[in-house]
Every structure is written in C-alpha cells, then in structure tokens.
Length: 314
Image 1 (cartoon, rainbow, N blue to C red):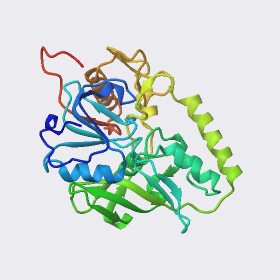
Image 2 (spheres, rainbow, N blue to C red):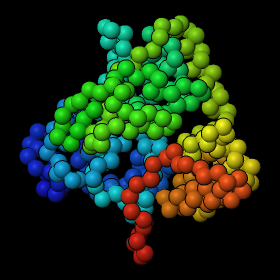
Image 3 (cartoon, rainbow, N blue to C red):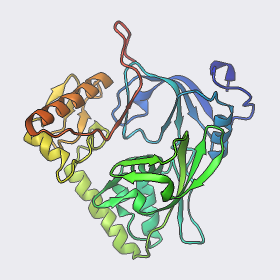
C-alpha cells in the first residue's frame, strides 16, 4: 500500500489490507449504480481495521459498508474513505456461555443458518435480510416479525482512535429501523453477542426454508435493488400506499418501481444512475403524500455529492 496516495493517513507501516483510490461504488452496492469513493479500505481483520483508524486523520469522512444492500452513493461520489467489512470482519462462533459472536461483516443469512444448526430459535428472520450484521445492528433490521435488537446481549464498537468499546442495549436509543447512541460519539459496530433461546434445529431450518420461499415469491430478487426503500408507517404498509397511488411500474430513466413489490425500486438493466433512483424515490414520496397525507420515510441510506453539471458519470 502506498500511504502517500491517501492524504489522511500517517504512520501505518504494517497495514495488511488493501487500499484503493477512486473506487466505483456501482461494483459494491446492490443497486448497481452510483459514483466513486475517494478511498476504499479493505482491512485484513479487526486488528488491521483498528490500526487503520488509529492512523487516519481525525476529520476524514468515513463510510462503513457491508454488502451495500441498503446504500446509494450519489453520482458525484463520496469524498472520504469507505471501509468494507464484508470479507474481513467475518468471525462467527458459538461461545461457551451460549452466545453467538458475530462480527459486522458476517452476512445476516449466515447467522440465521448458524443459529439453526446449533438448535437456537428466533434468528430465522435474519435469513431474509440481504446484508451484514453491521447493517442489521445499525438500523435494527427486521422482517417477518423479528428484529435484530430483540436478541442483542451486547455489542463491540470501534472508535476513531481504534479503541474497542463494549456496550449494552442501554447505551442506545432503539426503535423501528433506527439505532443511535444516547451519547454522541464516532463509533461503529464491529461485532455483537446474540442470545437466542433453545429450540429445535430441524424446526428452525424449515422456518428458514419457508421464509426464503416467501421472499422469492414476493420480491424482485432477479433485478438489482436495495430491499425495502421505505419504512412502514404506523399501522400501514409502504407497499400498499405506493400501489394504491398507482405507482407500480412507474419509471424514471433506468429506475423503476417494481411491479412485483411496490416498496422496491429496481434497476432492471443496470443502467440507472443514482440520481434517477433518488429522484424516483422523491416522486414516490410526493405522490403518496399528496394522495394519502402520509410522509414515507426512507429506509435506504443516501450519501455523497450530486453530479456537477458537465461532469461525466462514473
């Protein structure tokens, strides 16, 4: 790694990972659209990531990414460092106290299958979340009646100084698709200890199979998408409101409201720009607000700068 290519780094002689520059994010997000990040860090493991953060300039903008399944980077790009956890923070084990230890880069469905094999019940819903545990912790991801933080015993955080901090649920404000530290601080989820009740391995594995069959039947998994775009408003479903507003199949450039599930915006031919996807999100919000008086809240995260006039799209 050539440190001189990253103006925010100093004193990192033993970095074992990979550092790239001007990395196109359409390769790393499930929407297959978006601009570039100035720097992309692929650490070797948790220790390597801690060393990297310790050497990084304290005001460097940071973006932690798992599988990119809930993220859109605007066409103008992200002028900072993206840290890729999938493939590096991948430890998954069952501890002696019966807790599952899962690092932030472990895919949520893998945790579901791991728990089922060890005859632990309740985590089956994680099989329906197309991301990593880091994202599931950050947004209290859930589906089919389950939510991540219902099973979190404690978490491991990493701050900008590369320090590890263990925290309990009491340190966070936890809500529907939202998790935030009560005391403001630059910290990121790097692992969690999960407690699931004892169950039956065969029953849990069958539940996972049933859940995945439902998901395949109801969601446009063959087209590039970022999962549910909007949170469900209290007492209702975003998909119902969007469909009732007549928006199924609505297109803007290469982006389209899915015909199969109205709360999905798809990029069927991988030609949509991030701007087209974001504008279609705004159009859906405006139409639902006008027809029903409901303000749909985004579930997906949008970061970066808008494309400047005359600038080529990455």
